[in-house]
Length: 170
Image 1: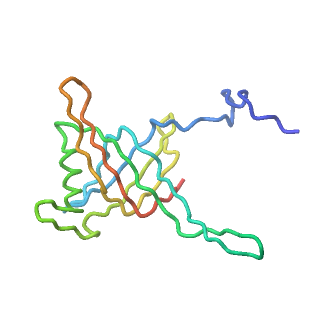
Image 2 (image 1 turned 90 degrees about the vertical axis):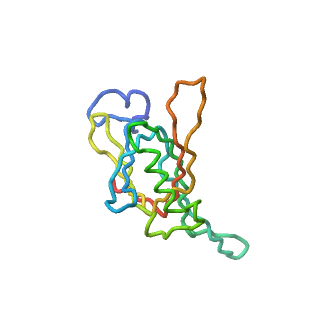
């Protein structure tokens, strides 16, 4: 009979169980522009790319069978630190203006605002453990931050990233 999985398995031993920590990751993307500069945002929080498949019902006699249908990738909520001496807010808003320009009412071309991103998860020793390529990213919504005279917290920008698909490489 195999050993039951219990807390003894979490002890420091060869082939132990090292948890992936929520704080060991980064998001890298190339914002659109003439030079397609790659940036790493100071992301406070987000989620890993969720994916699900619709079901297709196949009637079979007096029963039903199900197979996978179209796959959907939900949007990614990002909370990003804004820095006075960096162009975080300006870069995000320039990117958003490629999607929709409120001054002209024009909607941009997808080729000008969709970019790819990489989410990298690191081990506790700094080695890359997992990597996810997120394709066709664009800022669906931007909330530039909250202001409060009574608070000393940094301004945080909320960005909803819509994307086409995500693929885990490792």
